[in-house]
Image 1 (spheres, rainbow, N blue to C red):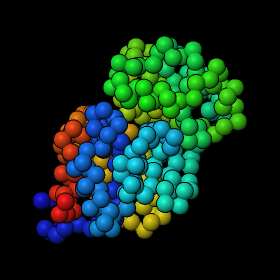
Image 2: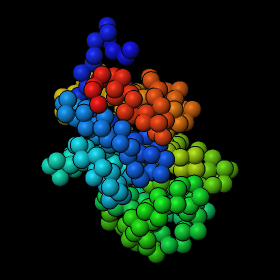
Image 3: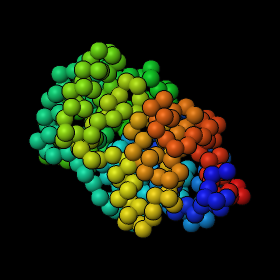
Length: 283
């Protein structure tokens, strides 16, 4: 049994990745068991946070399904939003010059680029043919497209807008590796991935672990009273920060190797099972 000297740990905050973790494989729905577990945990006093690569405008109806969500760590930790007070607590966007430079760089690649800025999702019209529609369930793809603002020129559209995160999807493995190596060599960027064909880019130091650490410090919650769940490399910083960091059974091998604990898959209510195991709640 997880705990210290057989005692039930006090959990003050639960942080959850969305896609591949809290969400079912359709990327849209939350299971009844996960909803019940989070409701019980919240009633016991734990704060609930989602920590996602998505930005604020494309969370879908996640917060409607789980109204107990208190905080949103969005764009891979580039910002933290307080739902109850409708306020951004802190945000670490890319410098304008860096953002514009990266827009030019990504425009040269045969890839689909999604840009998160001001809580919204942007994409460029001429990059639509590179959208990896086959990589996700059809219903999720349709919802994602509806949430994007499609423009003719991203650089012109976002000229004076602070960019939170870039996500570029590259299906050619050689081009992917070259782009990964070039971007990850830069000290001013934080580079990670949430899917095998994606590269996520934020400002250096902007990641889910740093955002969770800042939020816990603000709330006075120590890492030993924190749970976190994830399935990909971009989740590892928060899984290693939290005392009870869980990789899903469906997680990448990198995520599983780095996480302190493992639970069942997102299709098997892994979040609910771990919450019950650690907090020993009656659900």
